[in-house]
Length: 109
Image 1: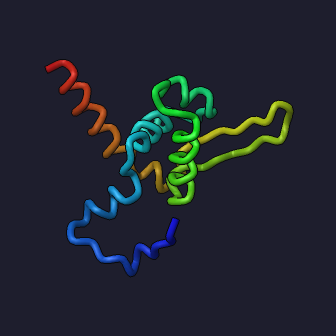
Image 2 (image 1 turned 45 degrees about the vertical axis):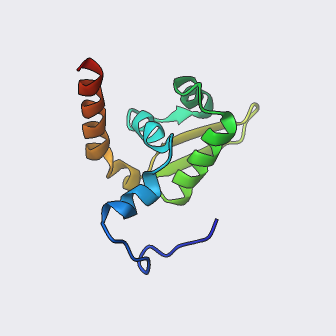
């Protein structure tokens, strides 16, 4: 993947910068799950059974590279890996809450 310096990239509409980071089929779902607390990979996958493990791994890596998700590795047997929101990821909490509320209202409509 080509690296992009967000400071030099030109956007026509500011929301493009947001979608560049959280766009993708599973990223917002992952962020919504992590706003509720730290999760292990298996927990995340159980909430998203239709996402392949490969896709989930890829989306988590991209969120980590973009500074929204923290990956903590505990060197034990078996290996333990946990995911949580970073401070920058936490800054999306209000937006994520509003998206969840909107979705809930749409489901009940």
